[in-house]
Structure formats: C-alpha cells, structure tokens
Image 1 (cartoon, rainbow, N blue to C red):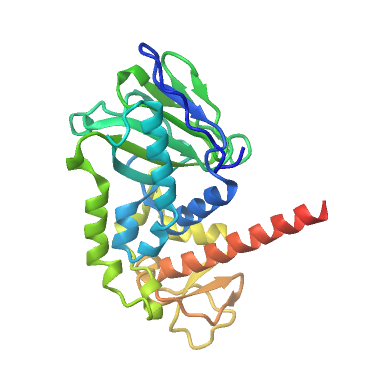
Image 2: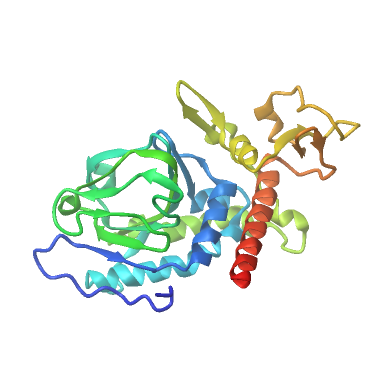
Amino acid sequence: MSAAAASPPPPAAAGEHLRFHLRGFLSPETCKELEFVHRSCGTAGYRPSVVSTSLPHLAATGCGHLLLPFVPVRERLRDAVESAFSCHFDLFIEFTGLISWCKGASIGWHSDDNKPYLRQRAFTAVCYLNDHGKDYKGGILQFQDGEPSFITPVAGDVVIYTADNSNTHCVDEVTEGERLTLTLWFTRDSAYDEDPKLLSFLSQTSLNYEPVHQSSYIPLPASDIMYWFAYDHSGFDVRCARVHILGFSFHSSIDEDNKSVAPAEDDPIELLGKPVRLGRGDDVFDKVFANGLHALQVSTYFHFLSSFSLQIMSIRLQ
C-alpha cells in the first residue's frame, strides 16, 4: 500500500484499548528523507543510548529548511489520529521528534502521560523509519493489555494510541543496531501547541537569513555538550561517530599540506566548531567546511544519494 493510499482507521468502539497499527503509512522515500535529517543533525537524547532530533533544535541550529519534510507528515498524522479517535479539529501537536534507540536502550512499563508535566498529552503516534531484524534487533513495542499486544517495526508503519494508562507499554532493549522513529504527541490544550513556539524559533534564526546567500544553509552547531553521547562509563561525540561510520575523520583546516597528514592535535571536540576538512585513511581532502556539523551534513547527503542511486540501478538490472 502506498503512503497516499493508506486509509484512515475506523473510529474506536467504547471500552477498547485505543490503539491502531497503520501499515505503509509513510513511503520508503519519506522514511529515508527523515533518516537523513536525523543522521546529519541528531544530538544526544533524553535517555541513555538515545539520539534525538527535535524541530526546535533544527530551527535553532540554522537548519530550518530541513523542517520541510515534516510538514505534510505531521498534518497527515494529525488527520489520522483525529479520525481514529473522533476528535476532528480538536488536536494540537505538542511534540515532534526523530528518536533513535541505540544498543542498550530500553524503557519499562509506563504511559506517555505518566508525569505531572506530561498530563497534557492525549495521543501518541510512532512512525517506524527502519526495519526490525534488518537494521536492528530488539526494540519491540509491547502493550500490557489489549490487542495488538506488540508491534514488530516495519519501515513506513505507524502505531497510534491514547497516551493514558489504558495503553501502558514498554520497549524491549535494543540489542544490536539503531531503531529509528518519528514520534509525535498530541494534546487538546492549545497552550502546549508546538507550532507557535516553532515559528518563534524560526523568526529568530532561519528566517533572519537572506536565502540568496549560500551561508543561509550553513548549520550553526549547538553547544558541544548536546552532542556528547554517554556510553559505558565514557562516551563520544555524535558528530565524530557519524562521520567515522561513513569512513571519514575530521582534520584541521589550517594544515598547509593537505595530503597524508594525521588528525589535528587540537582538542577534537573543540575542532568541530571551527572550519574543518574531512579525511579518509592517509588522505585529507581539499574542501573546507564551515564546521563539523556542516561536514557531517554534506557527507551524509552524498552517502544517501549514492545509496539511493545503487538501489535504483539494482532495480533496473533485475
């Protein structure tokens, strides 16, 4: 089923555990586009072994243009939730974020409104952007009561449910890989509407840039501590890790000889806020990036572009 053809769920009957599993809600292209945003912009998350990318973070770091893929998805999800729970034109989006659960991440039984500061949450939508078994192991969403009792993630699928204790749930530990989702919470209280806050962020950051200038799309990194991923009594910088996975390393931009040089002697984290080059093996490339986040975004973009081209070529050769 294509994303456009995914039909809204029927309204729930009274007394049911209010949850729905919508298959094929997001297209593979949309999943990949959102994955690109997350892998090139994410910061250390709100829980151990979690990486997150929120919309205010994108706006605050000069990446307002990367909000565009979220706009139609958010509206389609709101329509689906309002249709499922018969609350048309009644909901506001409280939070939108890309969240990846890495090896070791899990959460015990809880409801999504289980803290005093979360009482405004009425509904949850979790959109899976990659596949269980292929991209990661573990990370199964389980519900304490009712059906479906668990969800095996498939890219493009969405699960929506009420945020109260009728949908107490947990997520099994991720044992391998990285489980990636787009998560939204909805509220009936306009005081918690995410959109006015987001527009305020944009008016102070991205919208102040002149779009004719190339620098309009140069990211402005957040504080280094936001990229520090604590792991096993130590940790690492998310930007360094993402670049390393792509086969590159960061180097100072001030080396006179840009060939066959070792990484700069500077503090590697401090280096990421300055102009940098990328290297692979013993070679360091000529291109100078504005900062480490800029280098990560460009290298991630070309990685996704080449991967997509290979997929198209493979399909045509079949």
